[in-house]
Image (spheres, helix red, strand yellow):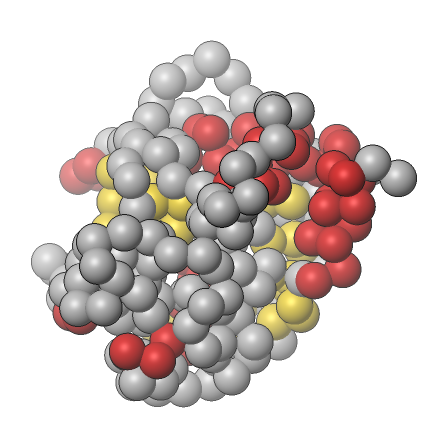
Length: 230
């Protein structure tokens, strides 16, 4: 097997089964609260790394010093395209049907496909909380890289303590794109991202914090995490 195929197999084998449950989502601006039922699904224990991202795109080998860093500067559209590429490279059925629309408003997701996809924000929050009820699943300095302890940079994945379900970096280090449109009536095609990043204060690194931007938006502490349906 090639190094890339070994890496793809490792990704598949490392996915964690998240039990069914529900997520209570809240919009801070409108104060609306709604509950979403979540079926069991698979989620990667860490965000997508630079090493994996480059391997899927058949790029040159990553500098060993940065292989374990989460990939950043990726748009929502970059992320869903990556999911399809990794699915095909792994012999799985891609979830997404893509078009040339820069607003991504007609991107479709087939959740019955067995390939990789982004989690919904309800799946993300349910997995982040891992049965806990507070804003964090542990002491923030132990579980997250954020403004107070990050020294202004992202860090290698899985270098902070995981949540009770074995998921690292759900809070801090990099924000993570989710599937959902934030509020189409107000913000049009803007998509949700979650979790807080290395540059953010503690109040941004909470399980319930929601942010949004255009699906072509890229920034230096925004990445994504892989999910698969069961």
